Amino acid sequence: MPLSSDSAPASAFQPNVSIREILRPFDGITGLFYIVKDHLSRVVAISPESVQRMGYRHENEVLGKLPGEYLPPELATHKYPLRDGDGKVVGVIAILQNLDIREKRYAHLGPVGDAADHIRTHLGEPLIVGEIARLAGYSERQLQRNFRRVFSQTIQQYIIASRINAAIHELTVGGAGISEIALKFGFSDQSAFSNCFKRFTGQPPHAYRVSVLAVG
Image (tube, rainbow, N blue to C red; front, side):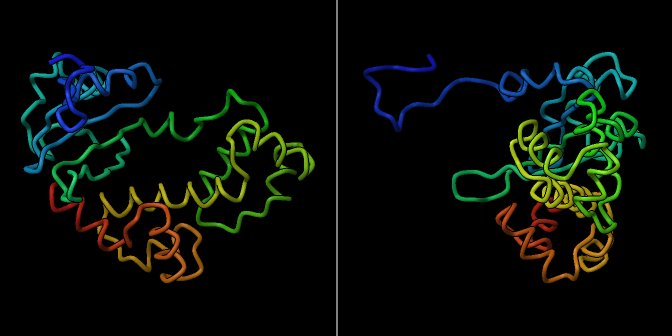
């Protein structure tokens, strides 16, 4: 059916667009790959770059496969649950990236990028804005101003977001306990981590892990 209709009621609007077409704009992002799985953990969509990186020639060689049948170890994976209108988990989207690319993601941004990369590779350590600024060759005020201009958030906000994203990866691919993950990524204790995680994702860490792992 067409994407819009002036005569059709709003409730009848159901764009006939495939998951593959929705995700196609992400295909051009360097080093970023994705896999979408259904509730049985079978692959239902995958980017062309992912297919090639895994050593396959065509997406049909990966579609329908289960975890462990296609994913090489040198790719980092972040999994996020896909929910229906009632909040029920109906699938998973996995975002993958080469570890070597992830280590220096923002080098092209100069000193601000160096600061961001430093943060992302030292998430489990105390991150002092003044020290980060010194390493980047800026004053603290200069770095804060330029960081906000580039990333549209403060350095402190970027640190927290980076820690939560790293924790999401650990929750969905590893077996570490919640308290261990909290300490690994620089949170003072499990309670502080859980409260921060829930603000970002809408779920506490354990519930998030269960909802993702339940569908692979």
